[in-house]
Image (cartoon, rainbow, N blue to C red; front, top):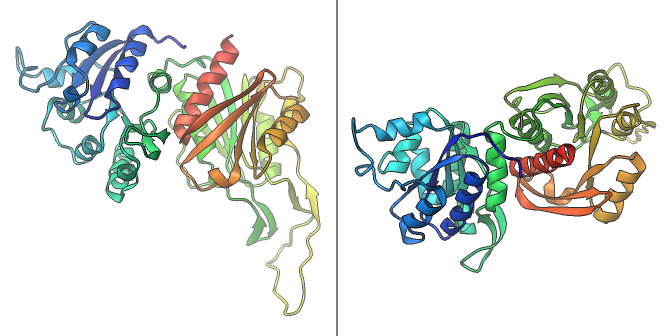
Length: 396
């Protein structure tokens, strides 16, 4: 586990069976070096007692806007000014709705509204509640407001149903918090990331491309920056915003991406090849739009594009290389074969049909020592998990 410097965290606990996990989360945050002030809603106290959190945090638990008022009566203001992060875990569907609407009807909601620090929430609810349009609208509003959404995870729920809605495991939330606070294990490292699709022109208006959205690559760039790295992103065509603290260079074709990566790689400690690079391109591109002729076929001669990951891995003094493999079958066989063929230490594999166009993913890490599965979660959570794993490998 990456230890953090002493920073103050307000841990908000709302009503839900996942509140029991918040006790372990509190323990991990304290163990990691943070000063934790727990704030519980009235509903949360029906699941776990304040005494539990007081014992784990070493501080009295705050439960009421009125009981917290002392001195000037502005404790709800002062608390948020002293904190580096407000973390609400679990965050119930009801609390997310109140947060999105800017309610200040209890201590925790008021702290969130009056904050000057970063705010993160770890949703926890039944899968049907998670899937409801109202919940998704609230989450979209919170994301637009700059709130970090951690999870949720997929799996068996307390109600007996199976699906998205479980709160992330405490160790995963602790890892994400470490990144949010800039205490990750990549401080001082230079990380180069390729992301998005490439576009291989057939003529001025047509080309060969793929369904990559670039979301995973951008999430990894964000997670690496949160972990303290100096991040350069080489991106194919996307509509995504550049993550905070990331330097971005836009490219179009595989040849463009190859040239940009090779220019940027000297001095890098890590290269993460997430981009879905076209394996082939047309031998020649027409200067003008090709016209359709009835009854005729169009034949394209394709040639191989440069293998960017293999080229970087073969460099003298190459950076630590991480590859990605999106397969449609036999994931373990094809991914491990690709890792060995390209001579890289770490390859991340997934099934394309489960990932393309989705907001979440299940990933498998392939290394010489064996494989490890990252259970299905949203792509930013997966990115943070990957960065923690990468940091542990580099630092050990």
